[in-house]
Length: 397
Ligand SMILES: Nc1ncnc2c1ncn2[C@@H]1O[C@H](COP(=O)(O)OP(=O)(O)O)[C@@H](O)[C@H]1O
Ligand SMILES: C[C@@](O)(CCOP(=O)(O)O)CC(=O)O
Ligand SMILES: [Mg+2]
Image (tube, rainbow, N blue to C red):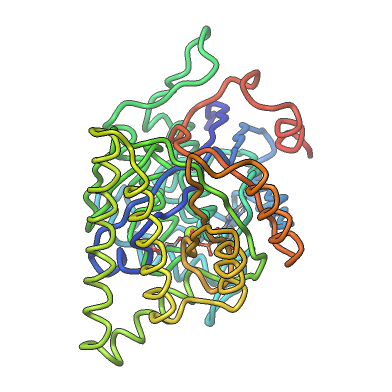
């Protein structure tokens, strides 16, 4: 079977408010970053499936004739994309050599890739191809690298198979899919996230698919089109962590102390709703210091709640303390337990203060950079629209 070559990218995200609570049916506010994951899919003729994941040092190849035996006998096209096919997951775990226990970084990425590949192509002839992925995002640090990876996989595989169109014209450098096709990409990306996270809310893959700022509640996605331009400082504490482990830790705590944790989750929900109201006011009336005071206080309160949920870390405490010494307010973003935090910069925060803060954070051993937000969702690219150094990595054998 011959498939078309595809080059796609999807953004990472920062959660302003609602991480973890969103897994339990509460509101989250999330925004895309201008840091992206790129995926290049190339048709080949060798009868192999190859995957190159240089960010996580994973380079694998399988014979298609072996891979064919992994497909469950009654596997067909599945329209219900909210659940994984347990038979296919079990067979794949055996195939990649994990029978129990938590998957490591490479196994998670491999399993979600093979799951999506076999789900998209399994009912027909398996195509010979090479998939290479490179990301500007730190892996496993709370910026949605897993979702950007899953969104890219879903878009590229669906596009290569012809299940969705190839929106790129000869004269465009980048192009986006129509709403219906984006919904399909998003639901397949959710499957990839389910393999990596266990129990994802779906907020990360929604941001990776649509980009911009979103309000997310129980699978319902509302794009927030009228939002003020926010200046955010991103800090990576470089403390490794796994979203899957942290999500299950919060679940255990909720099960152990339901009457204690329920009000915490309700309060996070109220924080997201209050933040959304403040952001909306900032677009409809002159922005005042009071708006920023409110946003800062919401960061502080939420950070305390996340500590109560058990997803804090001493390195994140250090981030909050160091930034507060410069009058800036921070919270963790994503699953916590290490990884990244966000710091709100006020319009009047001078570049001298930003530079001094960045230096103090670097002195703690952290990576730190001011970032712009609101990058576009998943896109198809002509190679000319992708930076040369990224293309070079994607095309390396
Ligand atoms: N660029 C990438 N290449 C391969 N796998 C990736 C990449 N980015 C993310 N992943 C997969 O996603 C996992 C990290 O997911 P997760 O723990 O949810 O952290 P994050 O906050 O970055 O989403 C990695 O262990 C890996 O399996
Ligand atoms: C903790 C959570 O709310 C966000 C996880 O984000 P990340 O994988 O840490 O980037 C989980 C989820 O929403 O699925
Ligand atoms: Mg993730």
